Each structure stands twice: as structure tokens, then as C-alpha cells.
Amino acid sequence: MITSIDPGSPTPIYAQIADRVRVAVASGELTAGTSLPSVRALASRLRVNPATVVQAYRELERDGIVEMRQGAGTFVAEVPAESRARERTAAARRFVRQMLTDAARLGLSPTDLRDALDRELPESK
Image (cartoon, rainbow, N blue to C red; front, top):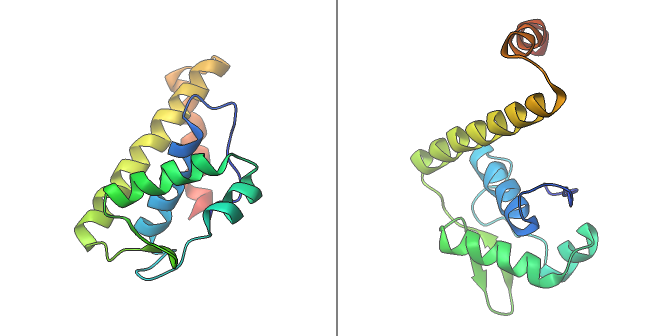
């Protein structure tokens, strides 16, 4: 689920963690009742401050994605199908925005990007 984060990204680390969990839930990789790694375990794995993981988990709890149970851990909540679909759409938009930002940084024109997408999309099917 979460194997790495990008410390150089303009997106805060807690938001990167939360976004990865959201995508995993939206895609069905994580299902209701699945236990997330403990704060300490995930912080250690990602080499971040445990408070960063707590902040991500709290944001996810506030959004109804996870349930934090005192003494038991953090678990994926029951997320309605329409919410998962909205999250997949939001994740796709975030992905495209990041791709456009990276393309601009590389000096790629919209035509260059379209050509690359046209070449890659048939191969990914």
C-alpha cells in the first residue's frame, strides 16, 4: 500500500500518506475492516515522524475512510461504492495535474504529451 513517499514533493507528507490510503480504498486494494499499519510501524517504514502518520490517519478518519479504535489500531471503514467512485475520479485528476506539472518542468508541449500518451496507452491495455 504505502511503500515510499516523496520528501521533495510540494505535497505535505501526511497528505501523500492519506492520498495513498484513499487510492487503495477506492481501488479495492484495501477493504472494510482491513487493519492499517500502526502509527509507529508506518512511521518507521517511511522514516517520518509518527506525528505525521497520526495527522494522515486523523484526516482519513475525519473523511470517513478509516476508523481509529483506541488500543486496537486503525481500520478501513465501510465506504459506499459511490464514494469510492468519487475518490477514483479525484485520484485521476490529481494524477493528471501532477503529470502536467512534471511535463511543464521538463519543457514538454501539449503536443509532446499527447504524442507520448497516444504511444503508451495502447501498450498498457
